[in-house]
Length: 168
Image (cartoon, rainbow, N blue to C red; front, top):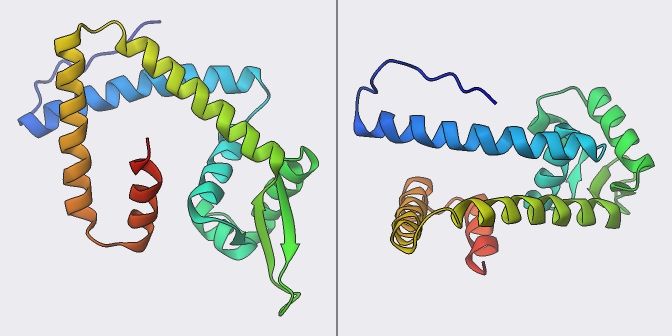
């Protein structure tokens, strides 16, 4: 695979870091997308499952808002995912007009598989680094997570994300 490098020198150390991160994650994203397509999984489906995994069950209107699509478009996406056993819809007992979407067992399994593939790929990549480089990367990511926590403050969604990741 050929990579196109920007010949311009980054304006600052932060820009240089962003350039390196974007390049690395772009390569990983392309490889992961190819694997998912071979398994018949679209990026949209994975994105919806990640949203549901992060936020929990969501009303169809909120899911459409997060996806930046109309409710009818979201409904079509969820219809196809429900047919594949990836999500399920439930009506709220107090207000039957409200339809909640949540991952079904097939969706949870798919997320676990995607996460396993991602983690396995990263593990393989990291084995190409010597012990000192691995420690530098670990320290840098630890510092980055700390800076993210500082930047995001006490946002409730962030607390969910942080608590979820803390066990890893």
